[in-house]
Amino acid sequence: MPAYDPRIDAYIAKAQPFAKPILTHIRELVHKACPDVEEKIKWGFPHFDYRDEMMCSMAAFKAHAVFGFWKAPLMKDKKLFVMAQSETAMGHSGKLTSIKDLPSDKIFFGYVKEAMKLNDEGIKLPPHIKKPVEELPVPKYLSAQFKKNKKAQTAFENFPPSHRKEYILWFEEAKTEDTRDKRLAQGLEWIAEGKSRNWKYMKK
Image 1 (cartoon, rainbow, N blue to C red):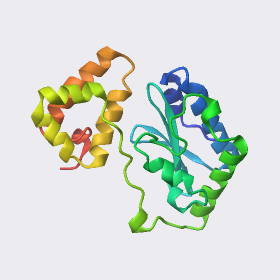
Image 2: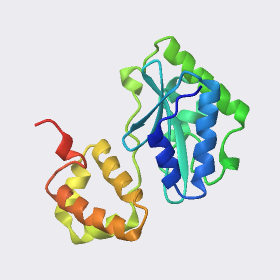
Image 3: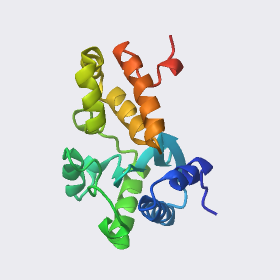
Image 4: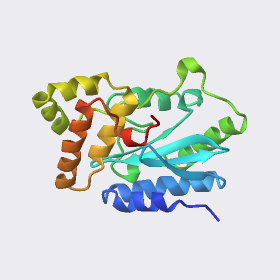
């Protein structure tokens, strides 16, 4: 029986209506192709590990969903890596708004099998092509706040990509504008102080 992480059940349940079937479909295909896959939540969104290594991941935002493979630079279909480098894609198949935007089940199944093989063989990403942290575009509402708070803007721009991503995901995953506004107010305060999103949990 496939091992499902209840945290991913909750993540899908909270996703926008259009995203739920996309995430569910991706999840089922990954489990079908890789029965030994291990589900986890990392950086706030679902990941699928195989042989104690990251294999692929998926995420949902307000208007689109994405998925990606950790070792895409080493996979045969170079479009996967090229697409991931696009400023507008943020995933290996661009912005997904329906199941129709996904590759065919056969192609996706093949991707997972290839990703599994890389993990089976212990092949690592060479340092010079190690996957960079995915850069997310700064939402308009956040840019508007930065115009009023230059200290926060400067600190944000000086953050490493991972810290910027953590904040943007936190803001974008808010289910209501009221929740987003509260997170934005708190986030701007922390950003101006040079604190990462998860500063409370960092070792001193």
